[in-house]
Length: 242
Image (cartoon, rainbow, N blue to C red; front, top):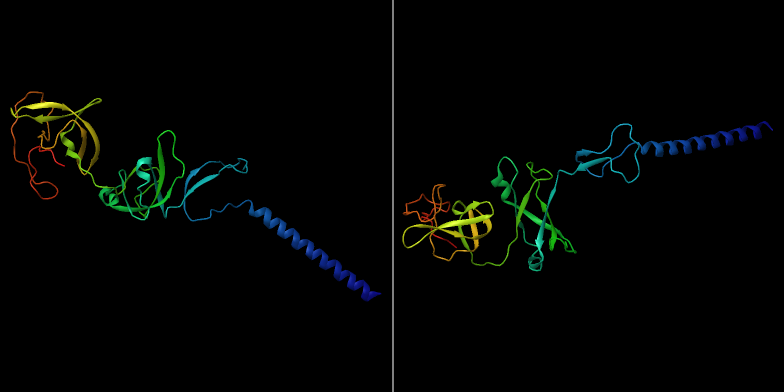
């Protein structure tokens, strides 16, 4: 009888130990809810709650950035998406990156994703470009992407030759009478210090490269020698280039 009683006590103690272990597991699960762990290492970019606030499922508490990689999102018109080669690198320039913007502009990104649906307001597709790791990059910076495309001819002039007054864009064209004449133009992109002229100029025409504020229509002008351009060649005075 004493042995049976001892065995019953042992079984009771084992049941109590099992219950304690179950309680420990339940307490561990409850304690785990008090610790929120991000799935990656990063930096807290934004805090959306304060101490004492009630945490609600589905409501973000913090915004954490993975600083090891950034992504540039651009919109590309539907006419160019069909010819987009996702295997080729994309030239990327972050204008606001400091201190060396030229180094950042030489970055090569990779197309990670092209949206399947078009934006009905802009009639463009969202293109996501993965960027290489760079200490100068920050979220929210404004960037540009240059996609390789078919070559085409275009008239370009030095950006300094374009005169903008309000909504009116013009250049000074040098006529056969050696006088400056105002010519309204329609401009395109400005790349490497040269602005594309979509309408208003003809190849071979001569423009005033750096018109002073005092220059008006009909003033006489004369050509002057200029210093060497960025490519090492002498730049003629205002000649329209392709």
